[in-house]
Length: 275
Ligand SMILES: NC(=O)c1ccc[n+]([C@@H]2O[C@H](COP(=O)([O-])OP(=O)(O)OC[C@H]3O[C@@H](n4cnc5c(N)ncnc54)[C@H](O)[C@@H]3O)[C@@H](O)[C@H]2O)c1
Image 1 (cartoon, rainbow, N blue to C red):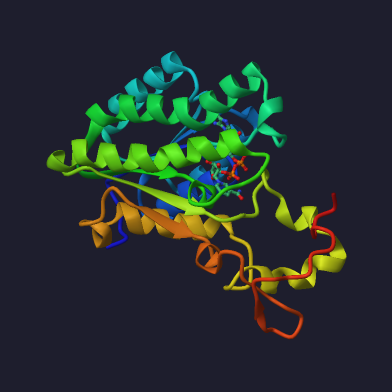
Image 2: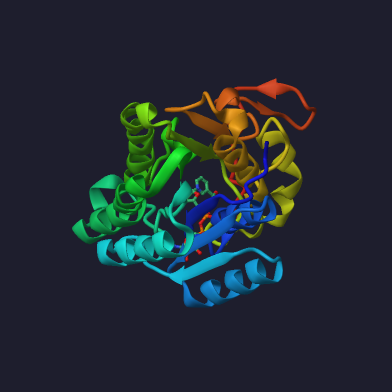
């Protein structure tokens, strides 16, 4: 049921991190893989990795914030693969905007919209006419779509918006047998969030007490969820989001103390990071 031979999947931002793991996982499951990637060196890198793994891959230097570029890529996909079975809207970034909301500039608002929301709208709108029945759309949201995150309010607002987009679009596309879902990861080790290098060495042995399943996310975790959501195993799942978080959202403010006991009143001194 996880055999994607003959299927075509497009991953936005498939050159690194979560998107790359998803692209490689679908390639490993037999799919034809299309990657839209902004960074030229990552384009070359993922192209060579997919090709050496024997994947029929179309890796394109495409900025998914740009309508003309997205439409041109979709035209190429249609010509080469005759349509699309899975779209993974993976591009998203807080763009280093971590500050009080009242300090966020107009330029930062526009940039956050373009990367986190407009890219999803453009890729999805262009993909819908190409998606074959039985296909699906998966957007990479964030656990921050379901809880607050201070100083990153605008990014969080767009991730919350993906929940509504996913629900509403699933209704529109259900009658066409196209499913629409999202994946909401907790902190995951990627170039954008190199969490292990951000955590101060003396706090590394606390990691297993912060998240119930004892670790941060790996890009492969998201790849597993994406394969499942795109597969026939999930053929009655639409309009929903998988929390991919090791139990962090369920824990809310609960942590384990140095004796392994649960507490929702931790004694906080410092923040565990190098800053
Ligand atoms: N890493 C985390 O902790 C985490 C947690 C929750 C949600 N997410 C979400 O997961 C998704 C992937 O995150 P990541 O950490 O793997 O990111 P990343 O920055 O490590 O990788 C993203 C890739 O997308 C490419 N990209 C960026 N803008 C693009 C554009 N306009 N057009 C085409 N390609 C573009 C980048 O060059 C990069 O290769 C994002 O939507 C992010 O918000 C990440």
